[in-house]
Image 1 (cartoon, rainbow, N blue to C red):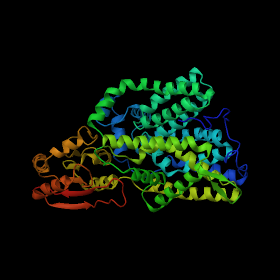
Image 2 (tube, helix red, strand yellow; image 1 turned 30 degrees about the vertical axis):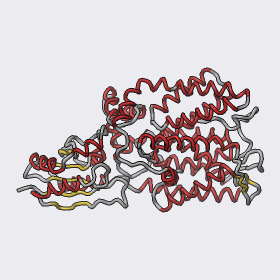
Image 3 (spheres, one colour; image 1 turned 90 degrees about the vertical axis):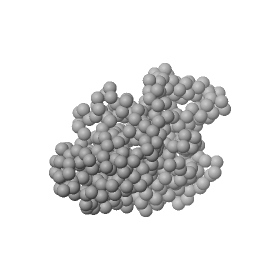
Image 4 (tube, one colour; image 1 turned 45 degrees about the vertical axis):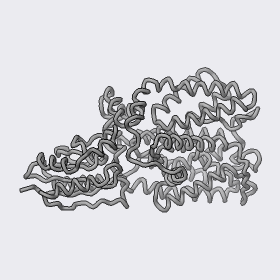
Length: 530
């Protein structure tokens, strides 16, 4: 969502004549084979939105297990999870048609991500003409961050789609605030709030900028800005039915899986994730993104080899840069106020603005050779990130499932410690195996985040281990899937293993591998007692 470029001027243009703005030389995109290559890159990005060999990890498997419930049961399940309901309702309908296979449940995000590309084209052309539109769509099509969430059964691809749509709606409504536009904007604002709670900070940033225009903008812009701000606020009406669940989640769920992060750590983590992740090329690509952000915000193409930086910033990129910065700032302040953690996936609400400024950074190079080289660097890093996303598993659950299936008997018991490993691991296990999670000894399909830390603090691995030994069939094996790498459960899974191994010989089957897997665990087979 946006306040449009030139919101404080008296005659804002609908689109810029070129990617550099009126102050610089005209930027033209070379035709022929170059255009064909750009189309091919975009097509490759579309295909890659449906390609990954990874099994589902915790968040994805948990989303699927909640979404496959009857519609009437989803709100109560989410009260124990900590998210708003819209994506889960959409995924529920999708599952009804396409099933619960890994590719099927991820394809919803892939379709939403593909639908974002034409919206990005319109935004890019409106802000900076065809050159910026081309660059923005190519960069978005191949972005490792966008590809990650296009191949994830989560709501983040939907967020990016809604933000691009919101940009266009706000831009149109400020120019011609027709009732249907304002109504559509109110609905979209409510939909954002029902998709992810970080939308509060995005809408807060939008309202701050609209408030500034209504107060200090040109006279003919103040009235439309006030009406648009009221429409954004009216979107909160759609959130009201969910408000009791949100307040209950705020009191009892939170983010016990992560700790408070410093502001600069949040910025660094976000840039690294935009670059593809915490590997060498991803970190380096994050640095390239930062450089292009600076050039996009401050740069002006002087000639085919030079770009000038002006600390007064470029008018066409002030709004997206301010929206990204304000959203991240408000979210960080809220995290500190509530002692919550931050995950870079939350930045999906500001990612479109960052990408717009990055695309402008590429377009500031007015010489075709220089621009092609810079874009080529972005494409190379993006392809590396796309390769990681397509080929590197996110979870060790598939290896664990294969090992269990190879040797388990129907009477065996699978114990998963902690419960956060349950949703992904259970998808890979034989259907006829009994499986429970620590510390609840309940089924593994969902995680109850209500008062999570307090519950884990009360858990006694000695007592629970003895209970498991008493319940397990003495003539069958116990399989222990465990990891000690989870907050609020430090040392408990190791202690549980020690209790189980007193009466049953323990055989290591799979070693925990944090270097190669985002979600990792070990597997031990504890032999029959007799």
